[in-house]
Amino acid sequence: MATTITVLSQKGGTGKTTTTRTLVDVFRRVGLRVLAVDMDPQGNLTDYFAVGDDLDPTLADVLAGRADAAAAIHEDVLPASIHLAEAELLLSGKIGRELTLRRALGEVAGDYDLILVDCPPALGLLTVNALVAADAALISTEAEYFSLQGVEQALEVVEAARALSPDLTWIGAVLNIADMRTVHAREALEQLREGFGAKIFETPIRRSVAYAESAERAVSIVDYRPDLGADYLALADEVLDRLGRQGDREALAQLRADLGV
Ligand SMILES: Nc1ncnc2c1ncn2[C@@H]1O[C@H](COP(=O)(O)OP(=O)(O)O)[C@@H](O)[C@H]1O
Ligand SMILES: [Mg+2]
Image (tube, rainbow, N blue to C red; front, side):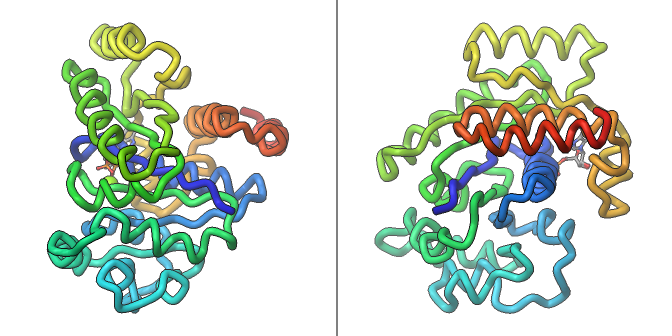
């Protein structure tokens, strides 16, 4: 059965989608079967994987009860569409509304090792669904003065989701899009470590324009700039470690050696 990781934050622009797609990419390279789920109506993750135009059905149909998850998976992506926002409204009136994604993914969990879920830029019903469906919550936060509050707010929602899904754990928070040359970013990291200790991943993801360039070209940062992709390879290793997947860490070490990073 797949382990499901949900990537969330309390707002947009914190690097959630980049983290999701890059971790999906790295985990696939080490030979894992990975499903990417796009819970953001903006569909950035879906666009990145470019699995096709006018996909039908999509996650919106799954949440609305019109399609099975298996039917809505296209090349190991469960895509978003603009209808996802409507699906959220529709869901809000239903009993068991928080459990919809969990139930849907249960049907396909046997086909994958990992399922990664990318969240919308708000802590609403879609994010709650993504958390209730997950085994592990991974919080992304930008390096700024309000990082600490942002992580605290996201954690409150993780706690609320645990009421419906007691096995859900908080795997950690990653300091993202961080210019570690600035005092500002180093202070943000220090504050986070003071507040949350070892829950903050060792590896911050450094800020670089190469991310926007690689996204535009639909190329993984691991290929576009392996020296920067090294951050995500290190983060992936920490995630596998926290999930207790030691065998996969060995495969990842081999990948890192092959890439020379
Ligand atoms: N490490 C990084 N350095 C610089 N820019 C980044 C980095 N990671 C992501 N970005 C860019 O920041 C923007 C927001 O990232 P994204 O992953 O879409 O965040 P979210 O999904 O939280 O809204 C995008 O334009 C993306 O290309
Ligand atoms: Mg996003």
